[in-house]
Length: 85
Image: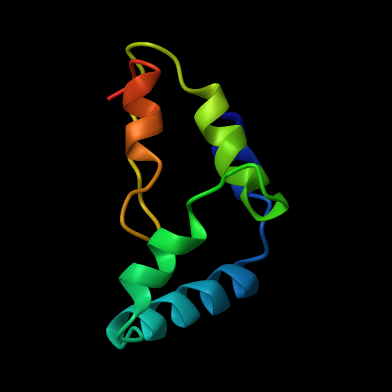
């Protein structure tokens, strides 16, 4: 719930801008998007993945996880390895 509370502090204009940007991207993603996403997620030790790693680190056995976001659900195997589903 901590993450939900923190996200509620985001300015509504910023959220609307983010929503519009994401919707526009997913309406017409680049042809190589899936391959690029896969390549970008090979090594989560890179600084670009600090947030991803932090979320996976919080998972625990029996936790229920909803992976919503960009990319081909690259975190799912890591959640499963920790016993989350």
